[in-house]
Length: 238
Image (tube, rainbow, N blue to C red; front, side):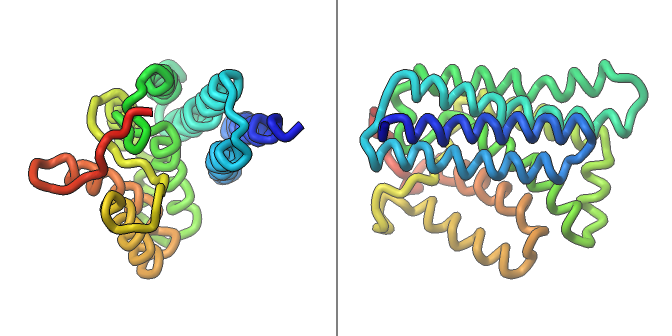
């Protein structure tokens, strides 16, 4: 019975993604964003629970990827489709832009499942990070007085560039650090602790408006730590 607990949590991730997709189709982008955030929590806890209970299985691994493509690929793609369609006439262009997210997410997850070198870091932007980028802009627009974020989600050009950028970053062979802490030590976790400090500082200063900034900080820190001469977390084959 215990071995089914992680898979049950994974299914809650998938259901969250389905709910987010339905909300986006209905035009409720905020609700869709919150459902994706719930999926992120379930995605974290299914891995945490499987490690805690030592309940690993091939089915669980495949199920996790299937849930992720729904929650972090199809659902954010539906949000982008809804937003772009609101700013242009016709449906072909919005669909083509939005389709980049689930397509790139599927390729990203397939590559991750067949790459044993992504134990402590990723190659390319992880699908939850891509989804969070989209969600962060939506929530920042909804819960702040910033006209900048309002103009972002109302701009088909910005949304198109964002979708292209996210799809490209998911497929690029660029190293992005994982948020998993194997210990609380500074050594080996430099990127994570710097990111945590920057994130807290941004949240204290900008509150909800900080969400897109936090995502930008994650990407910048990851890129900086790929430069020669900067200490970074070593790759540990799984």
